[in-house]
Length: 456
Ligand code: PEP
Ligand code: CO
Image 1 (cartoon, protein in one colour):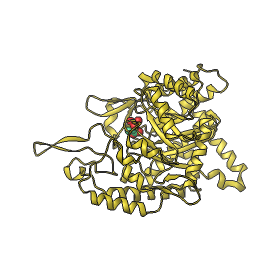
Image 2 (tube, rainbow, N blue to C red):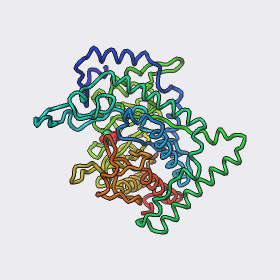
Image 3 (cartoon, rainbow, N blue to C red):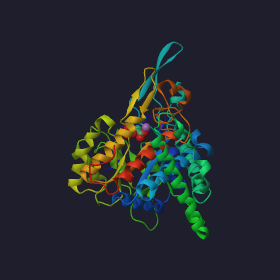
Image 4 (cartoon, helix red, strand yellow):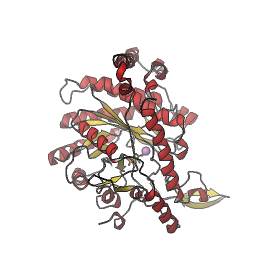
């Protein structure tokens, strides 16, 4: 059965279906944004992560905007993902794969399809902002009208973003390893104990000297050392956009979604009989699924069976986002999946279950809750004998003030200083690096330890 006949959560209503048809036809004729061999390579890396032989760092903006397609923002995101991954390599002694929430993270699910604005003193109901792929964030009726031409604008900006990333990844990015690129000023913050500060400084020194060593030894193979793999990922929310770039490719079985390497299905669109699951079960890419504390463990198993009937390793990435207070809900899900024998790569998203709204109406998250969910998730996996394959975070390389806490010292009062997100609050550069230090420390403690015995 086609996805078009299934109930579609978060559907966008266009007032000009013919214009939508033209945009989709044009998108279908344009070249793919990614290739099937890149997708298969990622799937093989994910299969390693499933076996505990590799870690995944999956992160980036909550809502990427078309304006984010600029060199400063792209390099800042790549830089923080790269530095997080180097810190994790150090602690886990495993290779790490970086996957950005970018080059297409332009469509957002919303809790309400419309909102009421006050214009000239009168209430006016307009569509909510569904991301730059659909409409504009500006609070006017014109800006909020879903515009099919934005599907093409999204495609073009994704292509430009990927083009820049590919150039950087094949060499030009090497200087980001270097000492002057690591901004460790936050370590001098008074809130960090002297012992921790020293431990983090040592970790970053070790990482940088290991890279220098590899570069010196590798003289002839310097290209290899400086070559960095980055993959792209976004929520596959807008099914017309995804389907227009979904096709068969020469000399391969199956159909590939070529807008991105790793599309994921969100917590709000994962109904087993819904359009999103129906669409994504038909493609060869690895597929992520967000799962919150409300999921019945047997539904998680059912999703795995529907989305991966051939039980391919590295194919389905279950991204748990329970919230620190409900992290216990993960354990029965881990047990049910383990008992079923269905393969899954497990990532922890410690962001989306930990949101709250401040008194003056800002969405925020507390760094301590994020750390607590991550630790609770590691613990749950250790007890269940399952493998945590990595993390999924909302992060920016910029110095924003959106998440409270951490050594960088963002207080509730400071949130308004540089609150720049188009949707959810993101870890800033220092908070992201600190989280990587904490995770890396916990993972190095884990080596040789028995289940359930993780450092606090
Ligand atoms: C997101 O990742 O930005 C998101 C909306 O997540 P979830 O589907 O987990 O709520
Ligand atoms: Co988000």
